[in-house]
Amino acid sequence: MRGAGWIRGLREAEAEGLRHEISQLEFDLIEAANSKGKGKFQDIAHSLRRQKARLERLEECLAAMPAGRAFQSAQSQFEGAGLTRTDVPVVSRRRGFGG
Image (tube, rainbow, N blue to C red; front, side, top):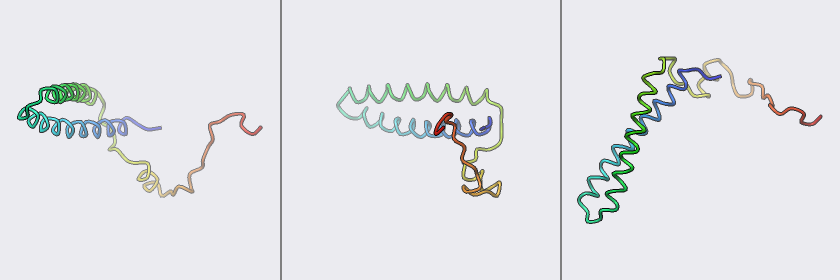
């Protein structure tokens, strides 16, 4: 089962992606403000407001989360334990299958 540090790492990565998207939308908004069409400007402004609100909620969520271990991918967890994919047993969660 994944811990709080893993979830926090996912949320931090999501927040970083939102920050990048917001900066791109800000550039698009400036470009749209200089153009003649108002529809594109309003669409970009709406997207920008929505993403900023989403980022604010995500940052509030991150602030409330306890600090945990740094995020590790599944592959690095296998390598850190000295395992390979063939060392990990595959368990089926289906019950009553084949019997």
